[in-house]
Length: 201
Image (cartoon, rainbow, N blue to C red):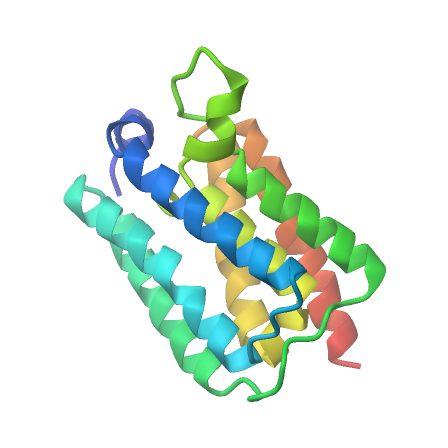
């Protein structure tokens, strides 16, 4: 694993040197959210499989910027979500209980405006160029947010995968990288853990 300063420098480089890709990801997510608000109801299976794409994107950026650890981790996560997603029910997504809907919405918003690493003179830039789809924590925040909103896409194994990766990267970000903003990711992962445990009974 690279040293702390190398990791931070790599994340900073991705967030600022590939910002146009972040803009593209924001456009995709905003269209996706608008479609959901307009009553589009994809199947749990389709939703889970679609969530693999931003994970693959993070893996690609990790590989091309010399961070094989994140490259491997997000390649593995994308593979797991894809496999577990294929086992999800081919039924339309259903919204969770209100508390989890609220937390999920907050997590999605957090991921889409994630301000860390982005160099900007205007707060507005965070709404369209934060590094979602490029680096781990904002991308995991959005994925966990959707899992909270839509019952883990009908698959407990998908939720468990999100919990494990979310807790790892959230705690790593806070303790190892001193990115205290990632406490939000830890909170979201713990909320999904509570939902996961409720679903077991």
